[in-house]
Image 1 (spheres, each protein chain N blue to C red):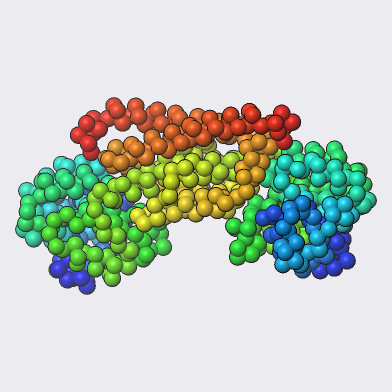
Image 2: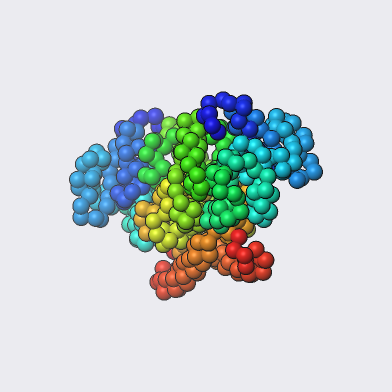
Length: 263
Length: 263
């Protein structure tokens, strides 16, 4: 990322070819020489399709820019391995849904001579079907100064809307945004197939919102609910408010004179 | 509605100039001579703006087509008054959010020599800001045969998507569609101002859905929850599923080894 425009001399290492790693490879292949590591046994075909060079985690860790797109469960292990292999001056970026804990892990384990940026692209393959222009990404500078160049690249070259923030501010807002979306989606999916015929515009929007997250990897929900320090408060508040609304409604409907006549 | 195209000789009487009565007047003024009745003291200016002739409920009930856009609470009273004043051969249409009870009331109180259609436009002023073409309306034929002409008018002249159905099928589906939208909106509005900055596409859709119903008249929510015979089942199921999801999550997160290390 030393030069913002197409620079096949800057190497990019992607750790993890899950849904987001694939999306990143797809959109970054024209700017960087990409190598990737993924422990799954069947990624060879996928890597070939994406045009990325599949190699070991050690080799990927020696790239100029290292993008960590691994699941939360293996995050600490991955960062430890990058820490012993990375080159001085490398830029390490993660892309998880939570930022407080991962940025602490990266600051703690990675050497002082690398730059660190914690990021959260607020989109996935579901919202990127027609391109990524205008989509949002949260960027938290953690160590070093190269976040400025990264932000310029994301804005000017990829056309993303970049929100520069702190891990704490990010997690607080994401706890509400992602926490509520996933909780509501989970409740509604349990209600069974939703109507599609006699629907209002607002219900159609609700259904669309749910369909966008229902195929998210279970790790995404797990990350939000477990690893976001503010998630528990949001979750409890949502369920408490639902319970108190339920009680109020039952009481109001019992008390209503209209109830007896049935209309 | 004897002639589908512009017919200034067919009179239309609108009972109630609330949000929906106004929307109807706005879109139907070019096809009918409209008179309206509304008991509110300050509708004179509004009626003038809409170009409708304000008169008594008795006079409105003598129109060729009578559109009941009155609140659920006064519905039975309004229908009784129309029943004694309406002309033989009139067409009476209601537009409420529930259909089983209102259609029973209309069939019971109105004379046999009028046609009756129970309808539910699945939209309001919020979703009609850029016109009504393509929006949905549920139509339940209750008495007489003129529903066929009405359906043709709604489809061909107004460009609406018409769903011909029964009051029972309508209420069953609407209990889910409108019940869930309003319950979720009520819970989320109690959570306080929702984030607008670090939002995902799915959360934006959710916010848009909520903003569309949050200014609905309280009568709409009341009608859905009280007067729809299927609403209670949907409401209980929603709250029960939320409660069981809450318990499951707390148990799973307590049991998780990741919980202790905080990530």
